[in-house]
Image (tube, rainbow, N blue to C red):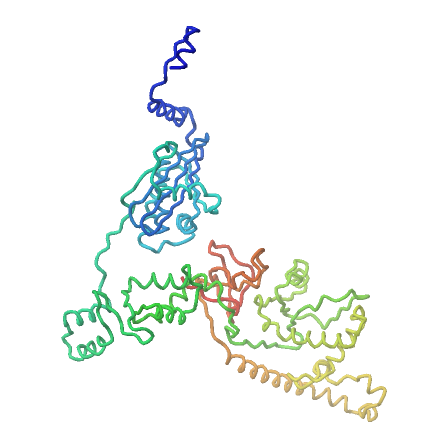
Length: 569
């Protein structure tokens, strides 16, 4: 009224605005209706989140168009719902909304690791209800040209999380910028029929109705067994020792309790026996719970990846034999050493075979070409399997010990002392042959320096002794060979008593020790002990295998069974 009086002196007539409900709807339609020429094939962004509590749940959905128009929806579920089910309901609601507004390419973001991994195929949906939800999501995804689902941290999905919690509140009277809805039935429902027959039925029927088998022996056995049970309010219980009553579970109910206790929110992947005992203390029972617990733990992927390393050898010791002296060489390197004044090269003729580990100095192209040019066959020991090249490692250990004791503080003089240490080693009787390497090579024992300073009997009494020794060298070599063979057999016999065989066939899935390769950045002590799975491509024999990745790409080199374990799925 005041405005009408004030404006009348200027010949201006004031008219109050009418109700704006229709105008608000018209403005909203103008804002959200896209341009007809807009390319609907561009990518839309969808953020979804689900929440649940003891009485109901909610879903938050945020759909953003390529031009920045945002649709927000909060849905309340008027039925009991689990967290994973709420996440799937939110995803299904978001896909339905995106299809209605004409989206063709969709990028979905969710903070549920389970849902995103199951949709992408990283996790397997084992729960029957979640399997149906997954089928529904895949069916809706076929309406789009492209759908990508990715897991995002909760902080990047905060708005959708807020909307899912807002669904549990009563819609406000003045809240017109948010679409709030209510759902009374889930998108997926399973109609559960009666459980199949199980070990519970004969005992329950006897206790409730007095039914017994026709055979007298079976009837007597059932009566003795039924004395350990009681039926309370239709539920079968076993009379326990650790506590008065243990709830008896149907086979279809055991998977849930095993999974929840083993890897649930209060589980830390305990062993099979501990899992069975924990279930007993929790008040559950079924006849095969110990065997089922062990089988469940054996197939747990996380337990397999973090299993302890087996110290027992996986295959029997294979004894290497040679046809002639120096026909087969074992090669290894010692170091790092300080730089010496020169190089020392020793040659004992061209060998037939050179065995080494998988170090880059032995797999180098220049080294392999050098061997092939001389007609020398190169063989590699399995990765991280020192027994294959153990004799070389043992000899190098003796040589290194001798160098340390001769050098004192002059570590750079190791090259000058190496010849003396090698000479001492070659003129010392070996426990494996009961002879010195020098005598087995040249037929006589070498004259060592002490025999010059203080003449030994063989220098004082020169005669035919040297000639006789050379005539007898063949016999000495045969005896040394027999002694060495007998020693290797004794070592192999003792070694084989500790063997716990791990044999694999082609196409078997295996895990590989994780400490062989370079460490994964950022994991440190928390890194898994085993990696994989890999597929056995070829059995090389004597505990060695060729591996390949699941995509068919071959893993370089051979791998010994000591570094592998079977993967259960």
